[in-house]
Length: 320
Image 1 (cartoon, one colour):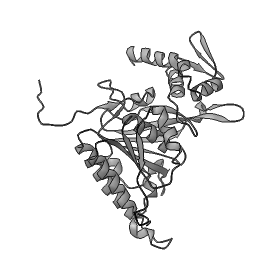
Image 2: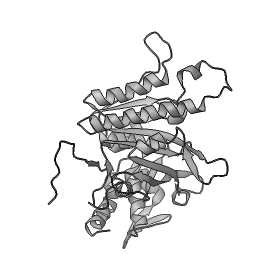
Image 3: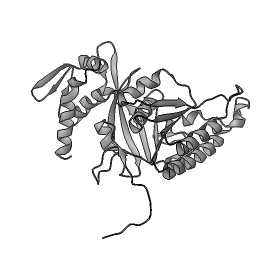
Image 4: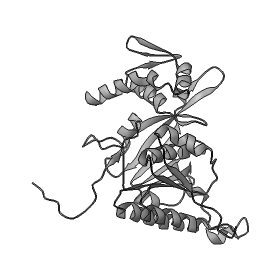
């Protein structure tokens, strides 16, 4: 039997309660569910797809009673943060890194990013940090330059330095932290096919997990007049501990964040355990209109969704 010696923290995983997500980022060989700790996780996709919202939820599940440290370079709605982390049962503190110094002057993005990695490494109660977003990084000298001057490669240098420092942080802190990186996608130019994210290749190389988000439009929950809940489909483009290529879906209600209950309903539909049209059915039981289930979810009637979680647990025990 092989004997492995040397001190190194045991890799653990964080189950989020979003089954298809936990399965997609889990380890199929050991049948462990959830995303790995001690990892830099990049979430990218088009503008408004729900990247920040998903990172808030995942961070809340990672450190339910501790502190989430956010380095936001794009602008955020402070009042939305408690709303977006509430579905993750988060009951801790969210701290936003100051964009202004104590003299009222704008801080450089490099200084803010350095503070993020330094504090995640050094402060025990911070187990998770968020950088939002790579595409908004502005090098210090570019802040004072004229519009039109070209400094495209400078952002890639900063991102590469950040990626190396973030990887060092998650690998050396004994409490196995996570750093989430929000990024934008854009179409590959010069005759290429597909999409890519900003910031160069080093982040993709050093990050342990890379998730690409898109709309699953056919699965939106809607009435004749409006969309009640958006369904986001994700692809695992990189997973250092467990492979890649698997897909997942997450329900998001604008202004209310990730919805685990509605995600469980969609998971059951995709697993063939339930049917969803205007009315949701599972075996011989009707759960009523899907629009009413959205209302039940928002009103906190969680017991209405117990059957879907039970069906998922039964499916997990029966094998995949």
